[in-house]
Amino acid sequence: MAKEVYMPALGMNQETGTLLRWLKAEGEPVQKGEPLMEVATDKTDVEIEAPASGILRAVTAAEGEDVPVGQVIALIAAPDEVIAAPPVAPLAPAEQAAPARPTPILPPRQPAARESAARRGEPSVSPLAARIAAEHGVDLAAVTPTGSRIQKEDVLAYLAAQPASAEGRVLASPKARRLAAEAGVELAGIAGSGPDGAVLAADVLAAAPAPAPVRAAAGTAVPGESVPMSRMWKVMAERLSESWATVPHFFLAREVDASALMAWREAAQSRSEAKITYTDLLVKVVAGALRRHPRLNASWQNNGITANAEVHIGIAVAVDDGLLVPVIRYADQIGLGEIAGARADLVARAQAGRLAPDDLQGGTFTISNLGMFGVDHFSAIVNPPQAAILAVGRILDKVVPVNGQPSVRPMLGLNLSADHRVVDGARAARFLESVAAAIEDPLRLLD
Image 1 (cartoon, one colour):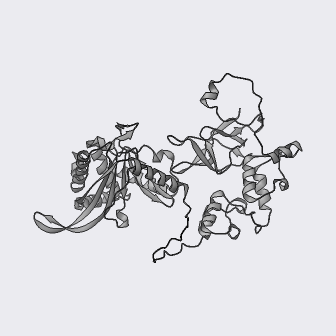
Image 2 (tube, one colour):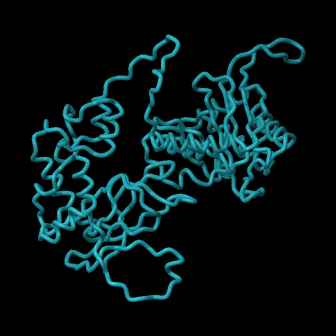
């Protein structure tokens, strides 16, 4: 019996998913566990594995289409299996409760032109093939199917046989087309490295001209100019705007002597093959402080405070399309080497666009470190439903009083942003004091 392929739910409160691309063409064999399709979530793009082995059949979702979670979008059938009817999306609760009535199985609704063609005995068209044809301006009447139905590969074969210079006949992935449009690059002038010479996103990025230098004069933006934003950037903008508008922020700041922190990093690095960063040390420090001050590790949910049993610390990572916050789990229970390894892996996969949904979920506190960019101090926006976020600046030599005498010390800037619904000023101050004390005397972590 054919196995149904659903649009998966990859995050909490997710209602739809965007099918970025099929990694297998309709009619191709697939093996259970191999990548089948790429789906976009609010935070990242994810490869979905095939749930069974067989032949990919009855594809009903097109690349670039938003599909409700739980809807059947394809079947994986045995090579000789007869598919009696197309997959049907799960019924809504109200429909499930209705009395059962015999209902004839009807084929999927086709556009009027295709219905007429079907009545004339012409082959039907898969949704994916129709979408590709529309994107490339292909007249489906000119496409010769290899079977009884025009499939994706039939349209691609037709396109490959056309002159490359013909307008709308260049094979390219949807992402490559978007990038080319944003960069103002003609696809016809790019040598494709994909199947049948298709232009991929990497080909567009390699061929795109270098960004123009930023104009120093005032008024650099052209009136009415609109810069296209990526999906990730739009989601980030929406969530940060919602946080700023709905979360009652307050901010605490202080500077701490980083002499002991620097010595700790040097000693830890001498004992570790992995690179140890100040962020790794701060994760360890903050995790210990959160255990002492659990209110900072709580969340605001359902108009109330929810205590989190575990300490999962998110690390803000800048990527080309926006900001991601992958999570180091059980940060209070693992050693510094494990923290460094987890951080390095998460950052590398974030920058390569290979994070899984689980990597981005479940954080109970966030650290944002901009010290490597030469920033002294900054205030960050709370990442709901978390209670707080710690913004970290660079270590900078300053003249400070030590035992009544001026002395040059490496000082580190810390700024805590907190949700006043969860944390009051006194609790936040005591937490920040614990963080500062552990930075200035890391042996406190052994207490």
